Image (cartoon, rainbow, N blue to C red; front, side, top):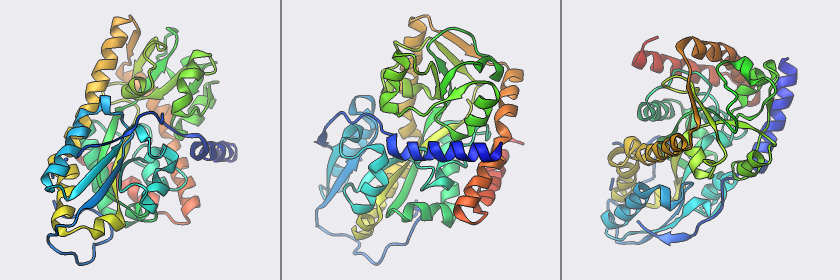
Length: 377
């Protein structure tokens, strides 16, 4: 079983980097954001406290401008609060570089700032892409989940190094929300066994053994191709957050939504990153402005607010379309948890083999400790 799963995961990992991409529509535009101690990462060399020099702040962000007014306001305020010393150019909807290109693009300075969807890079960022995002880790409130992730980044140099390897400095974390199951039909799903015969896009490697155990197929379909795959019946469901439905225009196709209790199956995150060389080149007041803007004043809660607005909108559309809503009972949630939780050790073993150390176990144990401290064991 482990050898077969390792092979499947290897194929999926390859496909992830080769195929993953959000829509590349949209265009660049000038915009400009408000403002804790310097964030995790390499310490900056000595820099002047202030400078009148103008710095080109080139932004590549996943969310389209129309669904993220708060992002637009942050960038506008950033330009204003820097007295124009940060000249902000925003490329919406990844029109500067697609999701697979973001780490390389930030490392070279093609962009100086981007949200980094870590779940898309399990081969180059396994500590970020997989550990806290394992199914049924116990994460609850999205804002608190982002804070837990940032705490882990601050505490573990190995996590920071995955960013530093690509010349990135993590400033803040935002979550995409709780994940559930969504289907194009109303054949009710309450338990893992109800997945029998389905073709599901899990967007989470650790679901593959559970799907196989329940005679369901797990396929990787790049987000930009999910609409066509669902429309043509290549797949009939996916595991993702509600905002995903809005970003890719899936409302008209989906007919059933299975919410796994109050907190979902798991969460995925974007890490807000700046090019490290660019950050180090800034005078200290502009460095602090970036930290304050994205981690403090305009941080976790505000960045989640846009996504939550889209989640609420998509749920309203589904109810108007008379979609089937299922909220699993506690006993049903326990059944899903039991089906997935056993794969945590397998995932950690794979990361350890890939890295040649056991730091993944330390991060996992610390994450569980923080979660239990916050919510109780």
